[in-house]
Length: 333
Image 1 (cartoon, rainbow, N blue to C red):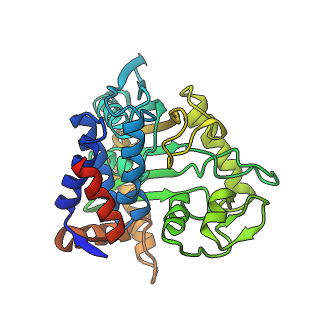
Image 2 (image 1 turned 90 degrees about the vertical axis):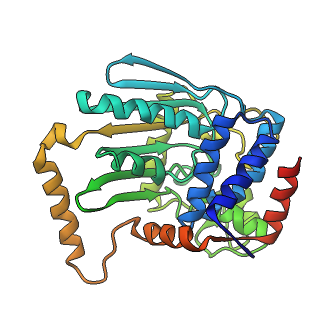
Image 3 (image 1 turned 90 degrees about the horizontal axis):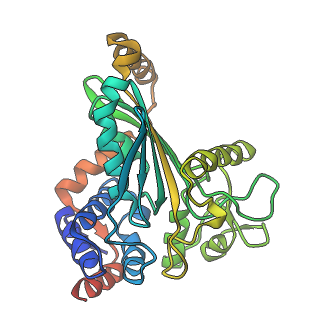
């Protein structure tokens, strides 16, 4: 393992993507997202994704030069067509517009279609919370969960994220996958030849497995069993159905260069808390947070990432030597 500063990783990401037919404005959005994942201790959504991203941009599976297109069919409805490009610039465009609209409208919905992998779900909602807004986010991805009692993956691991501002402290950020763990963790274990705990995934025959490669060939175990599978279906209908995007079983892999663009969807709802409760809204949020803090041994969801982020900014992060070598080769072209 080697230690690299966040600036070094950002520069490396930009060089890799520049050599992979990606426009500068898209390169920056992707680099910001991947490095932020590393800083928050989420390597499954960080630099380990860059080899696949670069390969897909080079092959055309993701259009690295796409310019997302925003429309506003109704005052509180924002639609963004990612145009087969990376999700990050398309989501950023929609959220920037939402931040303009929400204070007057009170609430606004953003649908992003024909998109790609959206990374750490907590990051875009955290950004809205830092602007004083509340945000809810759902997205889908290639099939990784079976319907409860089913024998074939139809849903993605379909994360749900939520963030709200908390007066005088970091935002509350809740970010959870609807599988017991994010599928990227299984992929990372498979790449490293490491086992996974039993209960994370099943193999292609639906049998529990501790072999990461077998788990990738099968499907993930939903969080909360039948309840998690039902929530994954809900996300499919909102993130893909409302945006005209691919359902998970129709989407191509985020990890390979083969196939058509995945064309998945993302969906946000952004609220201005002042429009609903005025100053009382902030007070009520703080009251609940205080009640949680008052109990011993509690920790707010997402709090750990802020500590890791501070440490990463000061000390850098560890990245595997093999991965760094592969990325340096891609950066040289």
